[in-house]
Figure (cartoon, rainbow, N blue to C red):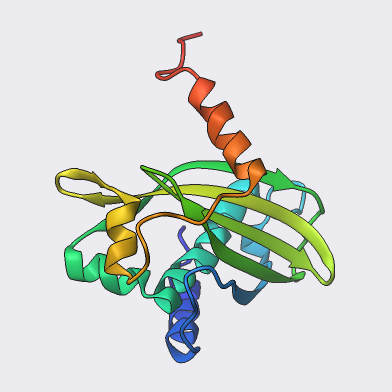
Length: 177
């Protein structure tokens, strides 16, 4: 089940926090609960992606993105992800999450998020997000303008550019096996 209570608490905390600039990191604290675990008593990979929502949505609140989405009647959807799992996370581990906008291209926003156990990175995700309207995808340049930003993104890091290029070679739709 989706952690709606945790999301509500994270959103409330974000509303009380000071606003962030568009490329500043939102930092949040989380606890791995027993219901977040898989059969091997580690943080479930699917739940990990859900927990990253608890960083992205408050990031959107603090940067003003959620306000723009609501004003325009737009939505936000995940259009791709690249995840790294590097350290075990077990029940009652305390985690810090860092979420930040890395930039955008002609179609998508790119969000870089990481989970930390103390000073050690436990995982990272690159999320490609699309802003949607009833007419289809809204160009990130238009979203940037609504946020008071220039329409051009700062240069994306080379590793994100490489991921975008690799994704462009991936066939769609996938072959039926």
